[in-house]
Amino acid sequence: KMHEFKTSYIHIAARSNGKIQPIITDGNYGFFKRTHILIGNEINVKDYIKTEGPIIPREELMAANEAIRERVLALKAELDARIEAEKSANESAAAELKPFMETVGKKLEADVSEVRLSTRLADSPCCLVASANALSPAMERMMRAMNKDAPKEKRILELNGQHPLIRKMKDLSGAELDDAVELLYAQALLAEGSPVPDPARFNRLLTDLMLR
Image (cartoon, rainbow, N blue to C red; front, side, top):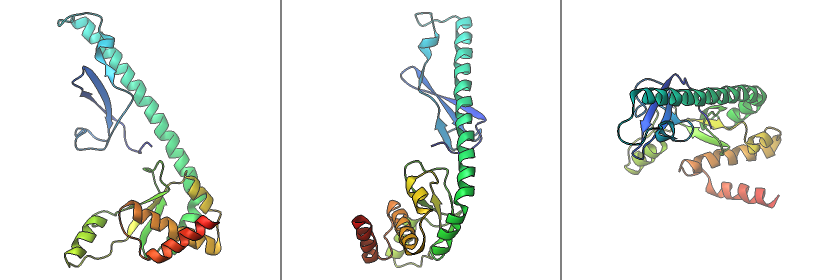
């Protein structure tokens, strides 16, 4: 699943096996510090070199460099097209799911600060994301285990607008929707390693769902 960010900077990571890996980053500070993704497969430099032996003519190196550059730029163009297509799909899903997300937000207003579409999820229907400067769930649990005050942080619930579960839930209503939203939030809690607030109720809802 592609993340949306600028793809203006291309770095080349050298491998010890004589291959290189094109890397696109969202900034010019080096891929060790910035968000990055690998594009394409590793490129075997020897595929672009004709001369055998340790000494390679400069002209051949320059030609190989240009060929590799063209391949990397083609990969970048392909990636940009995929990101643009995903952006368009997300905008369409956001408009379609806006009433549903508002409903979910109202039902979970005591637990989450916002409900929004995710650009990071591929297989999961939802996840919880901490807001800026908020404590992580693990840190909250650690502080409570040490008998220290840890204010409850409302996190952001991100939904995967392309997931079949979310597509099905948007057509539910009444008590059926209430139970589904509660289960969805519990699933997001379990996925991040947090306990569900009411295990007995969670088990009952899950059992009822399995019996349908």
